[in-house]
Length: 174
Image (cartoon, rainbow, N blue to C red):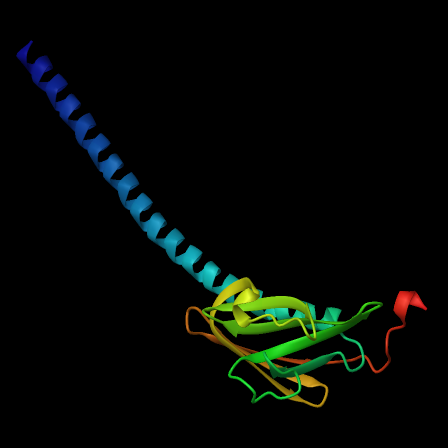
């Protein structure tokens, strides 16, 4: 009877040890999986942030691709890039009420955008915050605009866009 009781206790200890080893393995797998998941999320966020700014500016540029409607200047003067320190991309469109501009620029830690008329008197802080970044600059040579974006993680992206339109788009589809 004692032999059966001892064997039963040994079986219980063996099952308990097996359970502890199994639980330990599960915890190790979870820890390794969590650190792998965290590094994947971090990498994906960095890729998203760097591609978003480039894609945003490229889409705005292509949307405004009409003859003489894309140019680089300073925030306060679209014709003089040295007027202030805020490099600005101007995207012009005409309406029956006059010319309007979408200004894309960097100010106070964000890539910003503002839609205004030529005489609006808006200041750089009036623009909508689009994406957090550390800087953006524009350089225009002929029809080509080169954009340099310093992302919030200190990576730098370059984008060169060339205006393809040589014809003005007629108003009202005519």
